[in-house]
Length: 231
Image 1 (cartoon, rainbow, N blue to C red):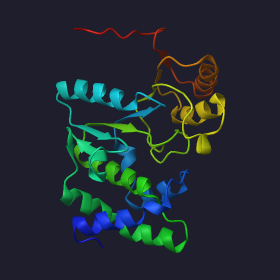
Image 2 (tube, rainbow, N blue to C red; image 1 turned 45 degrees about the vertical axis):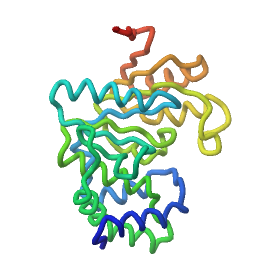
Image 3 (cartoon, one colour; image 1 turned 90 degrees about the horizontal axis):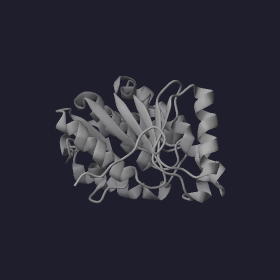
Image 4 (tube, rainbow, N blue to C red; image 1 turned 180 degrees about the horizontal axis):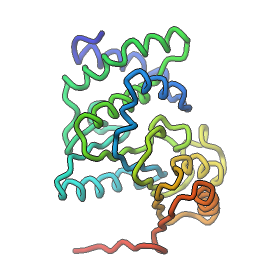
């Protein structure tokens, strides 16, 4: 078990070499061990090549103005790992960070025995979901990479957002825009509204096919709504 925040930080530091591990098997195992906090979260899920961070900020400010307790999960943090997990613009406390990490301790050991250790990102996702379930009225969850196989993609959001699509993480997501879009379109859920920014035609075709398959209402910037700058 982790007794101090310094011990937990050192543990995460030593595990950085594990790197990125796409796929949902480990995250689903971890969530099951902590009684699926994601099932009772109210969340907004955001993917995209660019614009995720600013979209999180706009939504957070709007919801705070309406007196919601707003959780945000973003990556990477400009400060430290705890900065990825915030409630009302304040990072998760040391006590809560330790508490939720310790709830995962036995599950981590079990996955390590299977020689399939979870990534740091996967652990932080689960910690954030436990935290948000306990404290947040609504949570804004940003994907780490892509969407379909991203560890955040086990929530049932109120709404999904894809801000933009371009060439990123090509060693994981593919070499052409259709492949990359297919990964990001993985956050589209059955009959769940999806908002998209202005996308290239090739990407838009993939999104349109996905929303038809999932019967998801689609709202496109410049078609269904516009953004106006107010001075």
